[in-house]
Structures are given as structure tokens and as C-alpha cells.
Length: 494
Image (cartoon, rainbow, N blue to C red; front, side, top):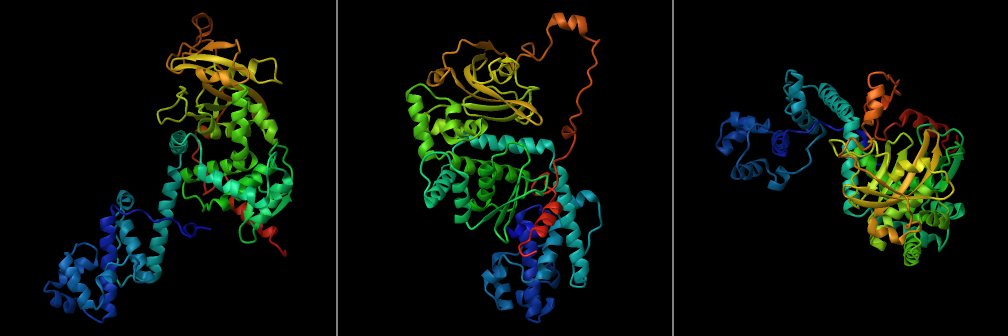
């Protein structure tokens, strides 16, 4: 576990230069007292006033290099020791942190009186003040974790994924190394082989009925045990959940320090699990061969590796551009039309808010991800061309049920790539003018508006998550106390 999680973060200084001066001053004071010298003694040797030396020790005066050299010689240390990065003592570290906090913008905004940090300040008072500053900063950071911050973090991450065509060779290499280690070749990854991977990494797997509700798995890093839910009826693939849990360990993840890091870790572990379930070494040739026959189909990838359609669709986006030269986009859309997940590197014009966030937006009712809900044949994939302001796209989609409703899962490509796919000759075609033209589907037709405008009063569903801040904690939404109590109950030997 990363030791950064053991203490709350301190407030930032207004600048690195100011922090360096405070640290330097505390180090000078410590070395001076260690040498049993007074301010007058040192000032006399430096040919300066004691008041000027006092300003330096308080981090309020920047010395010249020549004076630093003299000061080091006077105190009997090297210049490197004088300018060292580490505080000379625990008390000095606390003093530096308190000075830094009091000179920062957060403390100033509170309008509190400044506490004079001097040798006379009792250590317990100093510790209390620093702890209060840390907690205040933590709470301010927590309040800043709003849905808008989450959207911005997700938008930034999606941009990075687009730049690398959603392909992470370093994770592919880690996954293939594990598969080689346990001797897995072709075909679906069995539960037995997944258990072998856990054994190889030194982890034991246990299924329990009492897993904390807010978790999909819990890893006891001390005793190297991964706990999975016995059954929750959510259709979760235990292989994928376990591989994601192991992925955090293989990829060297520390406890996330913010929501952006949490998102990146989740993407990385999902990718890691997919790279094990559908290895690049065999999946890429499988897709290339299907392309040569003009028979690319997400359901074939699903069936070949015994995974869910959604997992296969995600994996296709990992490999399509890198190995097939095909740009694409992926959508997971709720039956209400709200975009739940998205990936794109083909220039498609998804709706977005002012921050660039796509998730949470309503997709055009004429896109495949919406029209698929009306398709009568739910056994086969539904295929459609959609003419948009930025070009024509072909998409293939299916619908799947969930406890929160029906979702569509769709993969789309520019018109010129449709010929490589089964169903690329479909006659289904629609036109979308969204998101730039409200009259496409967001504004009611004039004839309906003439009859009902001002006469309808729908009772909207209360989407409380739109008003709430992000869930607390390093792992958003997870009840840490519940997790600790769970581990305590299941501690080996108890």
C-alpha cells in the first residue's frame, strides 16, 4: 500500500520557491542550535545584522549564493547538507508544513489570525494545528469532487485513450506474460486457468456471501486473499472480476489520490482483464482473418472467447485500429437515450456538454443505439447506416437487460469500413442532424407542439445523483468501515 494514504495531504504552498525558503530557514536554525551558536555569533561571522539572519531563518529572506557558502562553512556543514531536501527533524517538518499552509491561499481566504511559528510553540500545539490544516484541506478537496470534476476527468482520460487508439501495449505484454507463465494457449480462459493465474501471483481466492454491498471484490493484501461474491444475480463474470482485482496488484496500483487516478486505474484493470480473456496474440489474427472474409462480427469474438457481448465490443476497440486499420466508436446507451459509456476515434459527432463530457448526454433518436430498441429481431445484431453532418457511419448493435433497464451496445465505423463487417450491406438507413440542429429530434414537431404545448405536465424522475457531490473516499462509493469490518471477520485464523 502506498504510504501516501497514511496521512491527509497538506495544503499547497503559493510556490515552490517560498517552500524552499521556509525549509532552508528551519534547517539553518536547527544547524545553528546544534552548533550551540546564537544569532549574534553567526551574524558576526557573516558580517550581517542578526535581524537579517532572523528573517532568513523564518523563510522571509532569500540569501545570495556567496552568503550560503559562508553560512555552511560557519555551521560546519557542506553546501549540499545546508540545501538538503529533507527537514532536519520531525518538529522542523511540522513547522515547515504549518508555515506553508498559513502562507497559502486557503488560509488567507478563511481570514484567520496567523500563528507565530517559533521554538516556544509547544510540540503538541504544533501537531494539532498541522492536523487541523490537513483535515481542512482534505475536506476542501472532497467538496471539490463534484460531478463536473468527474466529467472533466473522464473527458481528459477519453482524450488520452483516443490519442493511443485505445491500445495499451504495456498492459498487453503483462497479460501475455501471465498467460505464458501458466501455459495457456488458444481458446476461452477457463475458471481453472484463472485460478492458476491467481496461484502464480501468490493469491488465494475465496467466495463469500457477505461481501460488502458497495464492492465487486475485496483484496486482503496482507494475507494475499481475494474475496468474491458467491452470487448476486447480476450476471457478473467471476473470471473478469477476479482478473480486475489481480490487475491492481500486477500493474502496481497504489490507493488513488483523486477521482482522475481512480478512473485511470479502473480503465487499466478492465483492459488487463480483457487482454487475458481475449489475448492479443490470438484475438488479433482471429479478427484479421474475419476481415479478409468480410465477416467481422462482435458476436463471433464473443463466442470464440466465451465472454459477454459488451466485453467483446470493448476488446474490439482495443484491437481494431492497431491491427485492422479500422477507426471506430463504441456506445452503451440506456433505453431512455442517455449515454452511459462511450469511446471514439473515428470523428463521430457525439453530443457533449461545455466540459466536453459525453456520458450523461442524450443521443439522437435516429442513431443505431436508439433505433435498435425498436428492432423486432432480438436474436441477431441490428445493423444500420446513419447519415450525419460529419459523414455516414455504419453501426451494429444489440440490446441487453439490466436491473436498471435495457441498454444498447453498439460498435460503429465510418462508411468506408462497413464492407469488412457482416451486415455491412444492410438497407437500413437513417439521417441525423444532431447535435447541431434541435429540430432533428430534441424539439417536438410543430404539429404536436401546437396541440400540447402548455397542456402537458410530466412528473420527472428525481435523478438525485445530478445534485450530489461525488461519493467520498479514495474508492468512490465504497464504505471503508464496512470493508475493514469484513476483513476483520474473515481474518485467517479467526
